[in-house]
Amino acid sequence: MGTNADAAQPPSWLLRVLIGRKPKRTLARIGALVVVCFVVFKFVLLPIRVEGGSMLPTYRERGVNFVNRLAYLFHEPRRGDVVAIRLLAGEHVLYMKRIVGLPGETVAFHQGRLHINGQPLDEPYVKLPGDWERPPEKVGPDHYYVVGDNRDMPWQGHTQGRARRELIIGKILL
Image (cartoon, rainbow, N blue to C red; front, side):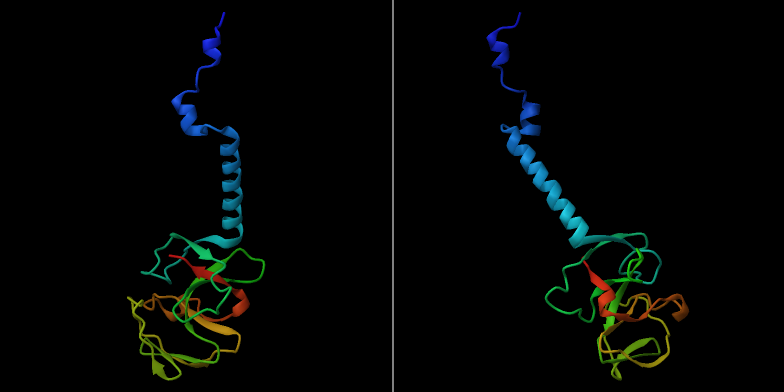
């Protein structure tokens, strides 16, 4: 037969660490944490896996980064931002590229250097320069010119060009 002393014994230290002194409050905190994590990872931060070498060496292949979907809530994308671009509405394929040309600008490549409106642009993030030659191309009013950082790749191996603003879904965090 048990005694009253057995019923009044405090919970073990392990239960106290895991659950706390007030289990209902702990359960409420866990529930709130689950809801916050769901909202953040469903609507704010979107994981993206880097496939291909067009962003080397800035972003390594098969690396995972996060897209901040709220980054352009209060301002438009800026030159130098690394962004995620939805390939087509509804698809799950995202491109990760750097914005180099803004709406209304003219973009060209001469001897591997990027020229904006006829002036060479300093690009400290380009560690692998190439020898691209592309004639001047005007960027439309609601478009951005995007390209990868690995300019050593052949032009044909890169996916680059104009991206409509509505297809840019956010800025890469890291």
